[in-house]
Image 1: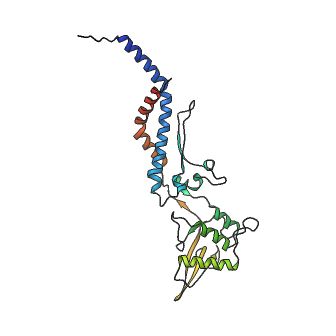
Image 2 (image 1 turned 120 degrees about the vertical axis):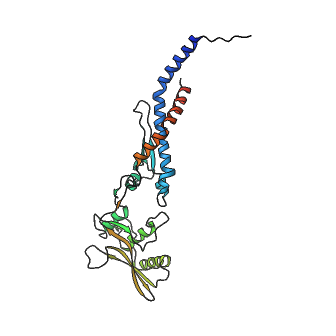
Image 3 (image 1 turned 120 degrees about the horizontal axis):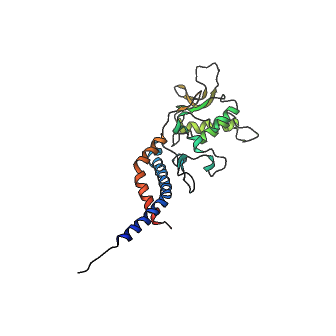
Length: 265
């Protein structure tokens, strides 16, 4: 018969040492935990929330970022929308300015082409341009960029000192023909015209298209000028983060504490 005996004092000493290690590593485990929670919230936005938008662009799908908790600072991490400082292409506007309304609701910011139209006196200051039913939107539900550039050139919204893209009479006619063949194949004639604010017209201010068919003519709205362009809040980011914290915090803390103890020096 073999007897196994363990000295209880050794167990107590090991327990005290382990307890000291645990206490020492808890701040590190907390920092790991909040960072993992922030990453989990970011993944949830990218995999569940943002894809629920109508045909989101890659720009939208990649708009989230994490600011990580760092050593010797408050154990706080942040999930946020990227700003212009996080965009690699110089001069680009950050997603926080372009898509921030999805998180806050309210009035959207003016877009670049609207500024050009205002400079040219086409769009009154303080107004916005929204797509009319005569526009075929792109795969992401936006006004095609090519159409915007051509409309600006059509109405001579580019300044000669900057971007020499204004159309001649011949190129205007070619643009009208291309647009007609792509969007209104049955039309026999087509041209754009502008209705300004204060014009004596029954039509809403904006850019319209006059379309001629064999049986007569019709008009279609292309870009309409409106006083407000508002959005409802689409994402409640604080509520989403709270849900992730309540669901995952215990799991991530246990995982992080185990890692902190295992890697303690």
